Amino acid sequence: MASLELEEILKPLIANPHVLGVLVANKEGSVIKTTLDAVITKLYADKLTKYLEMTQKMIQEIDEPDAPQKNELTFLRIRSKKHEIMISPDVTEHKYMLMVLQNPERKTESGKDRI
Amino acid sequence: MASLELEEILKPLIANPHVLGVLVANKEGSVIKTTLDAVITKLYADKLTKYLEMTQKMIQEIDEPDAPQKNELTFLRIRSKKHEIMISPDVTEHKYMLMVLQNPERKTESGKDRI
Image 1: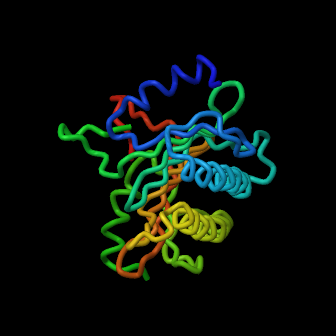
Image 2: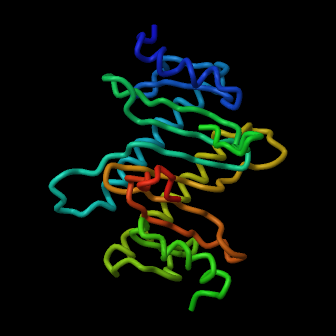
């Protein structure tokens, strides 16, 4: 059962008409909350948690070797022809992965960005 | 020597005060144009072209298996504590990778997003 804090975060996202789906998973890829169907949820949770790990690794590989403070990923936006995936890597104190799947046509009628 | 088309694309990016560096490389990681120093250029060109390839692969792995048209990456934004990396994977007819390194504090004084 997703915590109250998480529900508060998810409510406006789920209500947004341009959001196609929301997925929350832990570092190991176990699903905490999803609005996607079961097949897509399993596929995305598996592939995106691994991809997130690769991204964190790449970020540190391109960091200064003797940097006093390690660099950390804070947000990821992956736009493709079919959709746009946004990932926050450390949501709530559990450091969950929050993924939002959105329509790539981001402009609303008034020209404002969706998310 | 970078083409005229590429120079036109790069000019406003290089002139932007919040841009820390610009790098153009081909799919194999060979550098076409850079404003970064030699060490960082080599490191970024190598790591980011490989990362781009992994991202393209992941995008297709999460696509519907029998999709009539393969999905394609169009833009990537990787924000971390130290910087923000934006990547366009297919710039000019040569399909170069264009990477822009920007200050993660994106808000200008007037509150407008930088790029």
